[in-house]
Amino acid sequence: MRSAEVYRNGILAGTLTKINSRSYKFTYGSGYFSDYSKPPISLTLPKNQLVHTSEYLFPCFYNMLSEGTNREIQMRLLKIDKNDFFGLLLATARYDTIGAITIKPIK
Image: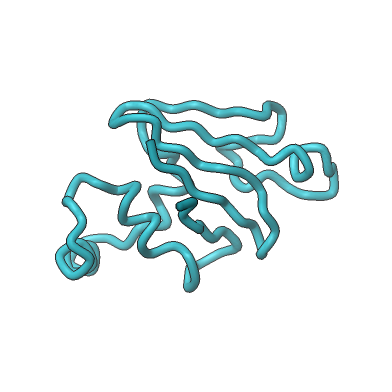
């Protein structure tokens, strides 16, 4: 099981967890969830429930990954398996992302 903290504009929004190859979970942090002034991190992860589950990496996180040749180069240089999208997300979405969401691995 691997986990990461999910930040929106530098504010901790919740935790993303890969339970196994077919099970992912996103949990809003209680402070973020209860603060009605804070928007959901994605339209596909609304704040109407605290915990979201999926059989695949949530689209809002998968779409943060590079594509094509750039993805192949990143995976080769970082020595990440070509099917380990969660690992690539942990390795590349910490600092320079397009949009408000950043991901920080939990050690």
